[in-house]
Length: 332
View 1 (cartoon, helix red, strand yellow):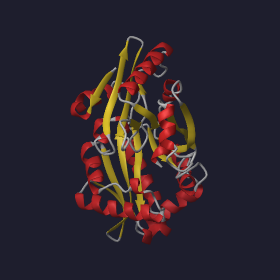
View 2 (cartoon, one colour):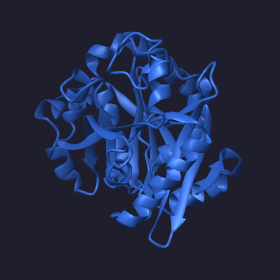
View 3 (tube, one colour):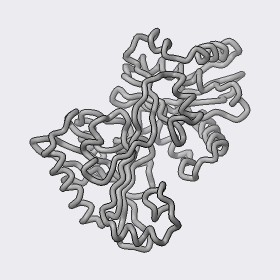
């Protein structure tokens, strides 16, 4: 198995782009945004099939061990075939175990991509692949009239009302607009009491727009940006990656107009799907309900968990209070 670092980003991206399906979350530029550990691409190549798994390797404090996680978003393993050959999967899994032994990896955690169905059969031989919640996607291949027909009736009414009373949407990558969006995003994170790991620095927004195929959509009212969505466009997949609305205009819900206009841009760019993502913690919360008003096309979001060194994992976890929901338990 070939181990590729960010020093060889062109090689990293060439491998990712050779796969059957991939997204922005697999590319080297996106992994540069993660400072939690060492970003690596684990690449296995054989006559029966090729696989690529991007990971973040993190040192476990005060030990000689490390663990693995995935970037924020939807990553997971890639294959050059829609239906990987079982023998190739078996050998790839063996190579992963060898890598975990070499690097003294205690546990592995990854957020899988809801739109890439081959990931579970590849990873399920190691640990467990568990359903987390549902995500929402708008099929941009449908005629636009049919896309709009999937909208909740009230959503169409509210979008029309936002336009009628003076809201509009524009695309931008200007530094001052990015800074304004970051402020709105932090305001949104404060409102939902998000964990500290979701407070990305301004440099994160700048780099995402500079180094990936991304665009910022801002809702404007009387010359002021009041809501926005930072979207990426990769390999026919459009992601509404980060959304934000200022507290003052929350009652108007201008993000509805933003996402509707972003959808139209996705059509113009030839994307197959606008992936809106899921809710905060399940498929029945208010965020999921908001997104599901745009479409009833749902996808399963799953998590991969694997303990490679059970005894070490248990010893590390015993030092923490019991919490069965958090993985790995020793990092809660």
